[in-house]
Length: 138
Image (cartoon, rainbow, N blue to C red; front, side, top):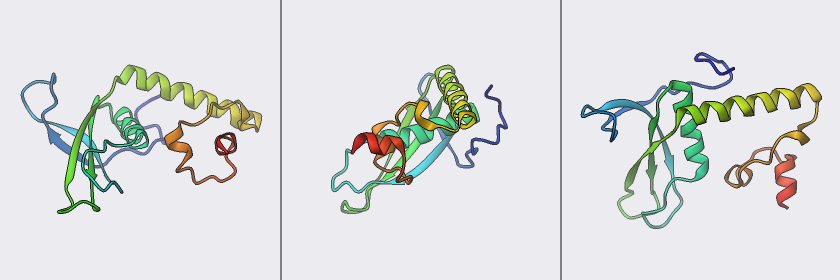
C-alpha cells in the first residue's frame, strides 16, 4: 500500500551528513528538521510530535535515521542541540499503511469515530477544534 512517490506524504528536502552508529564509518545524508523549544534550560528532549514528524519524513525517504535540531531561544546564548533519532522502517511502514487504511475506511463511511484517538502530543497542538480526540480529553 505504501510506495515511494505517494502524494499523500510530503518528501523532505533537507538533508544533513552525519555519522550514524552502526551504518559504517562514513557520514551519510539523513533528513533533518529544525524546531524551537520554549524551555528555559537546555536538556529538554524533542517532543513526541517532533519525533513523529521526523519518523514520517524518514519513512517517506527510506532513511532509518534522522536529526532533530532543537533551538533554545529562551536560554542564554540560544544554543542548538542536535538529536540523532533512529527508526525501524519496517514497523514504520506497517504503522503508516494501517493508519492510511483506517483513514480511507473512515472517509468512505463518512464517520471519524472509528479512528483511534490521537497521541497526547498531537491533541494539545491540534488545529481542529471539533476533533473527537480533543472532546475526549476535555
